[in-house]
Amino acid sequence: QSVLTQPPSVSAAPGQKVTISCSGSSSKIGSNYVSWYQQLPGTAPKLLIYEDDKRPSGIPDRFSGSKSGTSATLGITGLQTGDEADYYCGTWDSSLSAVWVFGGGTKVTVL
Amino acid sequence: VQLVQSGAEVKKPGESLKISCKGSGYRFTSYWIAWVRQTPGKGLEWMGIIYPGDSDTIYSPSFQGQVTISADESIDTAYLQWTSLKASDTAMYYCARQPSSPRYCSDGDCYFDSWGQGTLVTVSS
Image 1 (cartoon, rainbow over the protein chains, first blue to last red):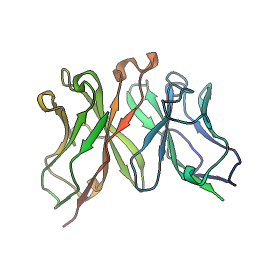
Image 2 (cartoon, helix red, strand yellow):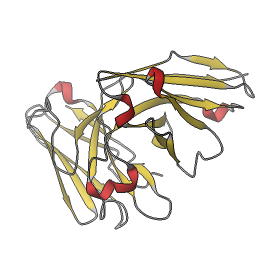
Image 3 (cartoon, helix red, strand yellow):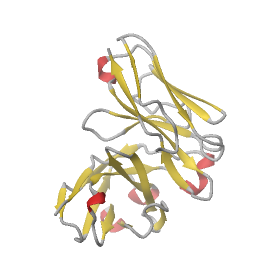
Image 4 (cartoon, rainbow over the protein chains, first blue to last red):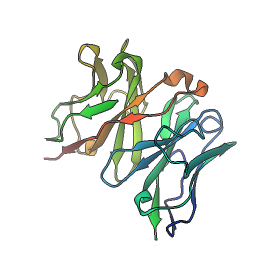
């Protein structure tokens, strides 16, 4: 069971929008920035969103991030078949354990 | 920026192993390098992180004492090693670059902006 909670899967038709939630606690999402990672099948994770809502160079604006309180959300608009992947949220845990934590991952399926 | 990891390994329980992660395209000593384990059952797990500039290292309590993270700044390479492997160590291991110290994550720059391709470690008798 992961420290950050994500839905196991979401799906939508091409061109539609999906959102992926990531919930945690005050010592995690509530106190630190959230980043999101895309893992295409058979490849390493790739940074998609950092510091809650910033996109690295080269990431299309179809991908967006937001945060409110102890929850964060990744949005993907104009869904494409190439977006089929696992998506993970992550943040630092400022509690006594002092570790980086990931969500359990969400599989996005394009119908 | 590129992180290139060593190749897949097949080991027996009780054997030792050291895998590597070589950085290029940036100043290796100015960024932190984390190690992340991925297993089908447990997803992504952060194992620990090292600053090659001074070898400052932070371990996850879950992995403290189970692995050793090190770095050789002269060859821009970070390492993850085991002295006695178990079957439960079977996993894909990734290295990933982080711009800032995890001790100051609330200030920003705490994310993994570049990842190695992964090293598959299989431990089986």
